[in-house]
Length: 115
Image (tube, rainbow, N blue to C red; front, side):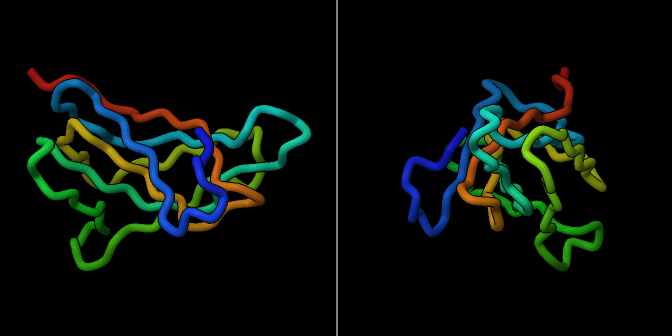
């Protein structure tokens, strides 16, 4: 994924998991092309279970401040960030905060189906 607009002040990417899932963490990577050294350095996560719900920011264990995750230092190395507590969500948004050259990433959520 790459932000559509180079000057987007608040870029984000959202995934719809089609049903609620327990999510325990995330892996990020940078852009695959060698001639583009693009990756995110830090990000925030927001989530919700239903389209009509407002997004909730993922917070620290105490719930007192929004968590800022450290992502990549290099474009081609994966970085795993585990959550202190799992979240139950259908929709998950990743908001890049700092990035190298351009907000670009590949990402994967780690979780399971709830039944």
